[in-house]
Image: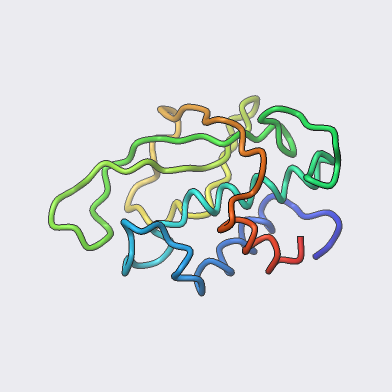
Length: 144
C-alpha cells in the first residue's frame, strides 16, 4: 500500500475487502446483504489507516487521543434498521468517523440504509487504541 492514502481511497479499500469477508461481519448480522454488520470493523480499520498516515500509528510511540488524520474521531449513532433478515425494525448502533471541525463524515457502510444515518445525533466513542483481531486481519490484508 502507498505510504500515504487519501480518506476516500481508504474507504474504498476497506469496503472492497469486507465484501468478501463474511466471517468478519458482526454476529447479529449473519446472512445480511451488502455491508450491514461491518460498521465497527470498517470504522476501526479506517481509524488505524488514517492514524498511521497522520504519523501517530502503532509503529510510532507518540499518540494523540482520538485524533486521526484531519481530526477524524470515531462516532456512534443509533439507527432504526430493517435490513438484515429481521421481521421487525430494530435499533442498532452504527459506527463511523467524523471530522469534528468540518463535520465531514467517513462512513464505509452507510449504503446499508435506505436513508443516511442521523450523524448529527451521534456521539464520540472511546479511543480505538489497538486494532482488534478483526481489524488487524483487514489491516494485514491491506499491507498496513
